[in-house]
Amino acid sequence: MKKTIALVLSLLLAAGGTVSCRKEKENDLLTLKYNYDLSEYIDLAPYKGLPAEGYEIIVTDEAVQQQILASRATYSRLTDVERGAEWGDTLYIDYTGTVAGVPEDEGHLSEEDVELTLGVGSMFDAFEEALLGVMPESSVSLDLTFPDPYYTSPEFAGLDVHFDVQVHEVCEQELPEYSDDFVRAYLGYDSCADYEKAVRESLTRYYTDNYYHFVADQVWNSVLDNTVVKKYPEEEMDTLYNGRLEFDKAYCEITGLNWDAYLNLYYQVTEDEYLTLAREEAEGRIKEEMICFAIARQENISLSEEEYQEMAADYARNEGYASVEALEAVYAKDDIRETLMEDKVVRRVVDLADVTITD
Image (cartoon, rainbow, N blue to C red; front, side, top):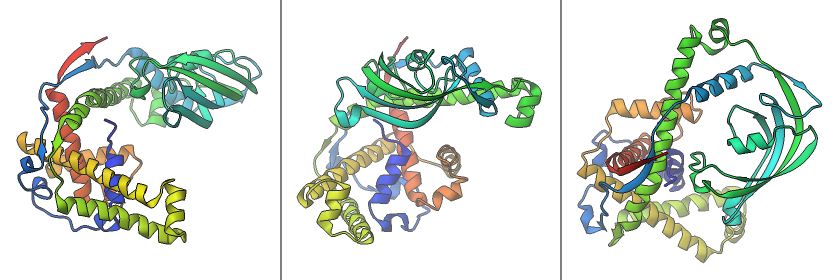
């Protein structure tokens, strides 16, 4: 389950320009959509006590020190060196990677102009360790294995991967001294102790979010796969399906292309294939919506205005929006509320799961 608020909001936006302009309603969220007996449309799969593997959330001192190092590195000065890379050096690299056993379109990794500080942990440990000793203006080939678990990309956990890396520069960092004066001047905290407390709390939130995604990948897919759709509600299907077509037709007109050329350029499909994909996308989205609303009613899940403001503020901040108001300038408030409620539903299913803690 890789559903994130950004993905859901993009689907809602893609459903048609009219969606984002929909008049917002003041009544309870659960009455906005699917305010009828959903048992006529789905046989909801069991969602309580689903088996899953989990792990203990631990913020280590090493992780805190890595974040401190990253903060110091932000304000460091870099000097090119003509020697092999060492821990703490900043490398400027390009890389391509191929993950074994994964289809090419999913397992091809590529990035250019990457600024990588060895020891900060922005790449997995084996990758950074393999770059120790590399010289500037050199190329290296690495045969590695992703860690397991691998929370950054769980789908690659434990898989072998081949990287070709082009090292452009190796730079030595002159780090500022870590002191109360430094954190006051640059990080906005009164002391090192205050900053380290904030780092630990931030990492705890980050690890907790990763934990929920890790478990949700297991249990939410089970609910989706085992819920049977008896029929699709016509009104919702027409709204989503036709909205998608209207969106693409409008965008096609903006590009100045004819319809066939537009489909070939942006989707690499024929019109018949596009219509099939659009309907399948609408069916998948409606199925997930019906499951979410059905569970929300059974579990009495709602979203208060206070919860909305808190959750929307977190999302806005994480995605680079200045405020909730800035987020609402892009997406309709009802759409944001619906997506946040769906996130609460998934988290409830995770909370109800029968999780076995592993190392």
